[in-house]
Every structure is written in structure tokens, then in C-alpha cells.
Image 1 (cartoon, one colour):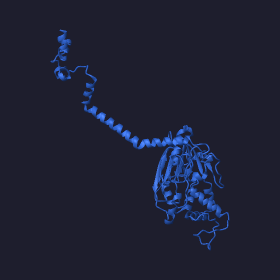
Image 2 (cartoon, helix red, strand yellow):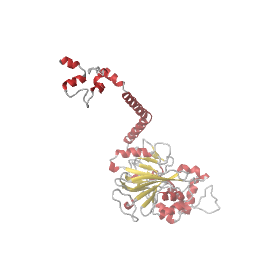
Image 3 (tube, rainbow, N blue to C red):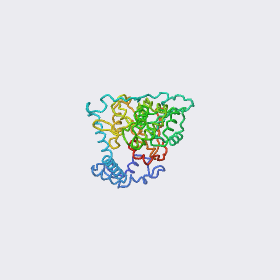
Image 4 (cartoon, rainbow, N blue to C red):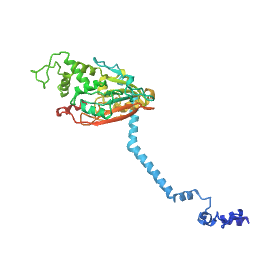
Length: 411
């Protein structure tokens, strides 16, 4: 009886054990349960492993998953081979350079040079800095914003258009310029007067520095020595002819037009402006060109802070050359090594060759306005947990004179 029962179809076994189960029962119809009656489903349970895998390969879904995983592996390998590998090797090389600069060969170990009539560093009033969480009330009830604008170069109309686009309100917004307000563009004096009227802050750029040097020489009453492009029988400008580049004449020309108050305002622009701590950005500083990692702000060389673009990876010595290792790459890696509370974000201009250059811990805003590019602002606004950041730009006209285009290397 047991052998017959074991050899009987599954439906018959159930009918024998369950009296109420029959093919005529209104709720159960075993004749329609194909998996119980069809012999092709009656397979032994002890199939060899290779046979089970072969059976799995017959399923289209399994084969589709295998193809998808293979394609994903190939895509990852290609990404590593053509992009991530080189990036990883470069970062490893740069980190190695940060570790192995000798104390005698490292830039910044000596005392920085001092310059007369120059402010090395200032701190921005904390009342002007956006905060997170509960906002400080402003006179017009708006939220506090910090507006940082890249190199203007005398393009007053574009600056007005940019501020209008972001709905600038002096009652709640504070404007900071990253240097090079003047020269190359059509209205340097107009830009100075306008931003002074707004109570804006600024840092000294390489062009302000050159104009101020010319202004100081102009009022030092040296014996005149006219250059080859100046008529010796006309007015004397009391400026020593140190070089005969076109840029020197532009510096002189603008220096002659500056009154005492305008020159004093430019003179008070520091080389480094410390904004303070902003949630999500760490400590924020604003300079014209860049900073050398590992060197205290007090020891940064003012000339290099106003002129640097690239850096030597072996000595960390900065350079104004356009081709080479961008200082911002080393700055990023250096900041990532520090505890979060010591990290610093630098906002700068000067390097229109790279344009809008956004890295962790550095924001480059010079987008070549005077050349017909754009004028760009970084708008920083307080948020619930961290500061909100957005970049806003306007198109610019090409304001360069034909005779002026050869001097663009100065930026």
C-alpha cells in the first residue's frame, strides 16, 4: 500500500490523505494544477551542481543580469584606466610633495618681506557676515547676504547690471571685490566712486598695487624722466621711467586722475581680508590671486598673494605663470588633511585664464569681463543649517583697446 501510495501522482496522494479533497470539489480542481500532474516537473532533487547551473543559464533574466554586470565591470575599468587612475596618481604625487618638502627648501619658512603703505590683513565686521540658524535682523527685514565679485577692471556698466540681477540691497547685502577694480576697462574712477558709495570692501589686486606705486611716485616729486612715448616739452609727471611697457603709461595716467580720497580708499584695501567662519565653508578669506598652503596668513608674501597662479610642487614656491600646477589643487589637498574646524576656504580672482574655478576650499571668480567674457558674483546667504551659495554672472562687452591687448598677461 505504501509503495503504491509513493508511486501515485501527487493529486491521488492528497485525495487519499484528505477525504474532502477531490477533483469534483468546488474550491479545488487538481486537474488544473499542472505542476502536480505534468511529468516534466517531476525531476529528482539530487541533480549535480553543474546541471543546476546549466539550468539557471536557460533563464533569460539570469543571462540579462550577467550581461549587465559584465558591462558595469568594463565601464568601471575603463573609467579607472582613462580618468580616475591618472587623477589618483596625481593626488598621490601631490600629497607626497606636501610630505617631503625639506624645511630649508620650503617656501614660507623665512620672514615675509614688508612693504610700506600696504595693509597686510583686515577682518570683516561680523555684523556683515551671513549666519546660519536664526538670522540677525537687518534694517529692511531682509536676510543678510555677502556678495563677492570677481575682477571688474573698470567695467562699471556690467557691475551695475550684475548687482541689479541679484537685487542688491545695501541695507542687507555687503559687497566685497576681489581686487583689480581698475584699469583696462572704460571707467575705473567711476567704479571706485560707486563701490565707495555702497560702503563696499575690497582687497588689493596687482593692478591697484601698480597704480598706487605710480601715485606715490607722482607725489614724491622726483626729478622727471619722460619715457619714449611722452613728449618732454609738455607737462612733467615726476615719475621715474622704470620700464617702457604700455602698462606703465596706463598706471601713470590713472594715478594722475586719482584724488586723495580715492587713493586713500584703495590704499586701505588689505592684501588679505578675513571674513570669518561661515557654516559649510569653514574659515573664509578673500584675496586677489591665491595663498600658499602651510603658511600662516601673517607670513604670506603680499606680492605673491596678489600675483600667483601656479606653484612648484617640490618647493611650494608660487609663480605668476599661467601654465603649471594650479595652487588651488595643492590648497585643496592640504585643507583635507586638517581637522574640519581648521579648514579654510579662499575666494579669489586674477586667473581669468582658468575662468570660474570651483574647488573644495577655493572659489575662483575671474571670468574675463573686460575681454568680453562674464562678470561673476558669489552670493553667500545664511541658511537653516549651512550657508547657501550660488554663482550669478552677466555678459560683458570687450572693452580692451587694440594697443592694450598685448598687456593681458598681467590680468
